[in-house]
Image 1 (cartoon, one colour):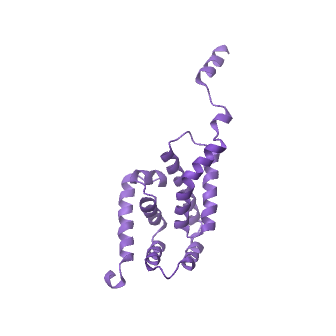
Image 2: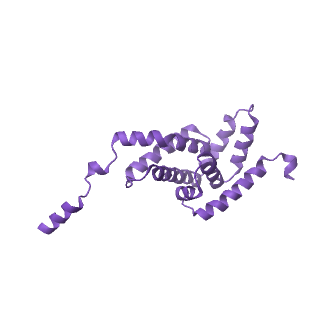
Image 3: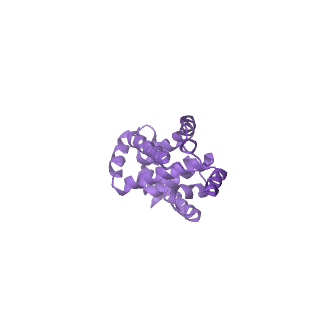
Length: 178
C-alpha cells in the first residue's frame, strides 16, 4: 500500500480544479476563436439564429470534453471540427432546406457580386461550401482543413480543387457556360 501511495504522489495526477479550464481562460479562448467560427456557421447556414445555436453547442461540447491542453491553433481546429460535425448533423436531418430559403430573402439586390457568390454557394454541396469557406475565408491549410473535417489532406486538396472549379463555372456569365 505504501508503494502505491508513493507512486501516486510521484506522478501528480491533476485534481478536478486544475484539469478544468477556469473562467478567465475560457473567456480568452472564446474571444479569440468565436468570431471566425460564427462567421463560418453563418456562411454555411445563412441564418444568424441557427449559427448562434450551433456556436453555443460547439463550446458546450468543447467544455464537456475538456480536451488536454492544446496550442491555440490546435484548439481552433478542434472547435472548427466540432462546428463542422454539428453542421453535418443538421444537414443529415434535412434542416438545411429552410436555411436555403431564408438565405434568399436576406440578400441585397444592389450588390450583384455578393449575390452571384451567394447564389453559387447555395448550389454547391455542403461539403464543397465548407471546404471553400475554411480555405479561403478562414485561411486554413489543407492539413488544418483535414483535421477540422476528418478528411485526409490529399482528399482535401482534390475536393477543394473540384469545389473551386465548380464555383468558378457557376460564377461565369450564362453565355460563357455553354
